[in-house]
Image (cartoon, rainbow, N blue to C red; front, side):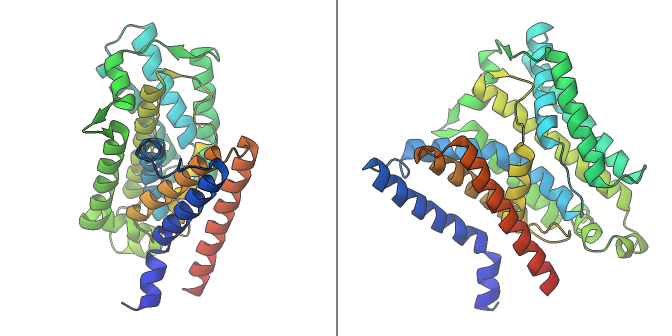
Length: 317
């Protein structure tokens, strides 16, 4: 492999290293001490980034099929709200409540998939509609109020650690590895890339295009629900406004990590690096006392740059 291609393939990793060093230096000069490269801060950063990494893994699969899912932030909120509602308000044991929450995410993903495959609704429109529906249902269920009082055993999944490593980080690593193996070593994974690369050719080659797309959206929905449940366990409560705008972070992590919005290209391992980069940027801006409003501006600029570079690479190919 030529050095030029090797550098291009791992550009997101180099970017993560450069940004981390730059933010670490900036924080040191501002605070007069090392606040960024500490074990506590790194573990906090990884815990925060793990939720986005899980959600980004799901949306990456959808994007590889040349689709998009704008509803994942709302699905996160609805799944967590339903789980907390049946657990706290209805007295259902928390383990079964988690299954109910995951089922809600799966159902939302299936509805998105059916809209795209059976009704032929463009993915942008179908998932935009689901974004509004899921957020509205979350507000209807809670009346706009917070649900708290979740069992300690459930909260351990967001707050606990195993040998010093936060549980959400371990779960995120497992999901990334599982998704990578699915895409890399299975027939379904090859079908997913084939559909995104050239849907017409894939159909003529005997690939069950509709079933592949349906799986992609269902997988995305259940991972959005999983991320929401872990985040709820971390906070110990849930609000219908949770994860507002988080779909942009997940899509940004995917594109920064090398998943092409044109479909058929990229690896979920790069998505993990993209999620880490987004986490570093947010964590660094907090340590630098950057306003939350300006944080949105910076993330928006990163998204535009990533999409522009993806488009330029696609045109060159």
